[in-house]
Length: 110
Image (cartoon, rainbow, N blue to C red; front, side, top):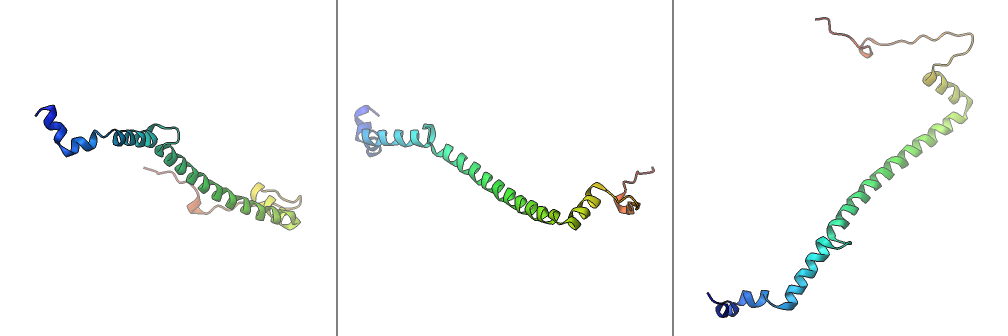
């Protein structure tokens, strides 16, 4: 097949059109190689979605902390928190820590 016969083919004439070639090269460049490429935008969108999930989690944690702060403003709530978390006690009382059997670590005796 010679060059003359190849030029007669319809697909060769379409693909050798300089405007089509320039358009294809431009699209490939914009999709993959440019600074604002599709791949970069997709990666940034995924990161944005992940950060939105983090934002929702932290908003939820802030609301829980605000509720706990409101409880701690009351002296009874503050005393209850200190007794439960830090095992504090009054001078004239004793604290007994009760551990249930299923909460204790048991060693295998083989």
